[in-house]
Image (cartoon, rainbow, N blue to C red):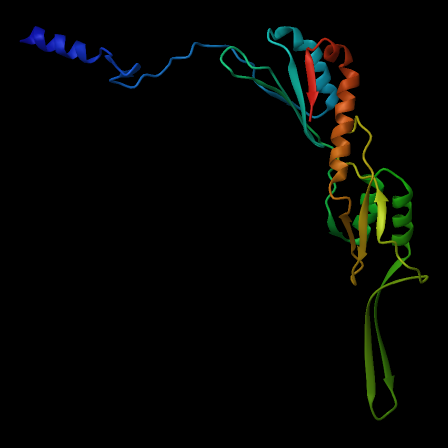
Length: 238
């Protein structure tokens, strides 16, 4: 009895298949045990030049070219391999821009002056804004009239220019918004001033600058990796 019981238990491990109308069915669920494959770990850098150096140094290690460089946005680039025999690909390198990013919205007058001098490339627009902001004064005054019978008090708050002029509402500016290895794209910004003297800058090109930046990043790689691209070992895309 013990021998028969053991034989029965062993038989439970056996996988049985059945064929119906040309299709094969199993009486238990099977899972494929994938073989071990050594795969590279991804690495993150902050510059386009680092991506070029990594690709040039390690391209020969990949048996299944090409490598794909994808410009995901003005501040991010990824590099991944071609599909292998198991229809898998490896995420190899990432470049994330660490240059100061422009923040749309309102800022205090002094903060706007500092930002224009440190986070923008000088052009006609920054010159106009710096001159304008230097001539803005904030008023907070109280005047009183007293005739001995009654007193009238009036208060005045807001901002004013030392000389009256009509403000430009759209200003061309070049903030740092993408990798420093490429030329920063210029775009128009809407200028607003509120009663407290704060400066409002709002992007006014509908995001066109992002496409311009991506095109310039692609051109950078196409120049830096020209030989590898001509050999079909590297593909650059957006």
